[in-house]
Figure 1: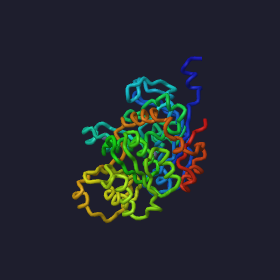
Figure 2 (figure 1 turned 135 degrees about the vertical axis):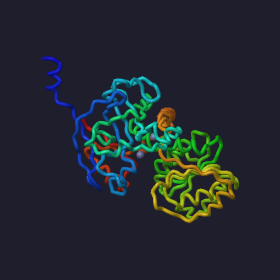
Figure 3 (figure 1 turned 180 degrees about the vertical axis):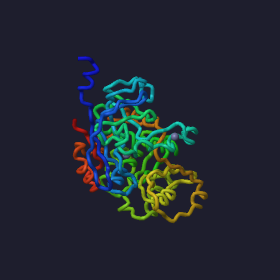
Figure 4 (figure 1 turned 30 degrees about the horizontal axis):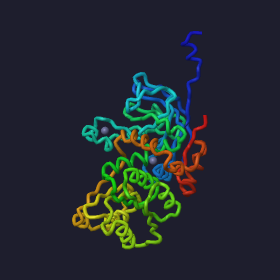
Length: 375
Ligand SMILES: [Zn+2]
Ligand SMILES: [Zn+2]
């Protein structure tokens, strides 16, 4: 048999993806696995997590629909485009390698990419919101396959993380975001850092601040989260159920800092009141990073003169420069034995049981679920 007729006899390989039809309306769809463009990579999804942002989309609190979901993923290279020899850090890559993709694209041509501000790329979601009917179908990783586009950074997984795949799958979201934000706000050795909120971003911020040599204070009001904060290196925790006024919490931070106030504040609570409080907890000349308040339409009274009188610098972070994912993977590899990262991803579901995973995530029966496609 000639190779051509053998090709014709072979059935094209197909894969499945989770399609969002509308709010709380998911279905599985099957598409042909694409051949990669010369600069692209086709992968099989090994793990993909359920992040808070997907919960919003699934519940309909977000305009996105007619799309594929997912963004935190770890993938195995199954088909390399003919021109792809390395990952985005120049490390040789082969079929079978485990890689972590950045979940948004950087077009390198828009106003912001041209200025080197890749985190602000205007075309960041050009691929991810597309209908799966559009080739190459596998635009997001709640699926058996994921297509890494030519303008999508991806990095090989360090060997230290091969036994911690769930943790590695999350690196492209919270840890990368936190590393980028902390680079923006700047943490110096021996700084005192207040972290407002001990969810995924807060725990990652605590670990990074701790590794940078800061004294860390974490504020939250949920037992499990306060315990996690301590396990992730918090030197002090403040339970806002006990210290239930801003004045009481400020007094505690002042006590820890000999009356000076914290050098750095990191807001990862996602409530506007935390922003107002955070400024109160800082010293004169302090620096503040706000990352948790992202939803539009949530307002609060605030006296901007407080910033001026205390000479506070404020910075923000949403997304990150794509090469920060490389640093995040190295950071995890270097610290994987020192912190209980596995606690951050505490439930595994077969991708087929996606509805169950979403309901459990919505009810907060778990910290974070990972989805494993069965093939
Ligand atoms: Zn995420
Ligand atoms: Zn761009």
